[in-house]
Image (cartoon, rainbow, N blue to C red; front, top):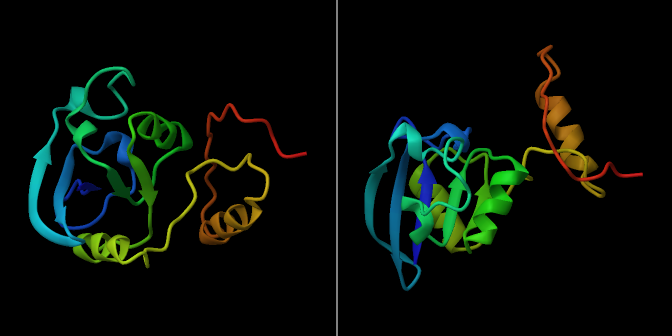
Length: 145
């Protein structure tokens, strides 16, 4: 099993997966990390720039852990059989080990028009209450009624 972790600075987990060009690839055997190597993408290979139908160096992984990704990217990964996981954990090895022992705390993808996801929306607002900028998410899902 292979787990990719987005890490643009090569030391902590990256929040913006779409533009990230550096990923640690963890090789897992019997629930243990047996190898870890850095994969560096070209700018053309970032998720933001590549077509969903093109083959991608990360197609060989089963899990992608990052600090943030939109619902569109999560769905694109799912179509390739890759589980996209969002976490606030910033330590690479800790996140992978927590995933392996099922203790990794997961966050929702960055999109708020979903029924039953209001807890995340409130958490998001609280986290940004001191900031006065707005996020413009392009989500195709209908608003909760």
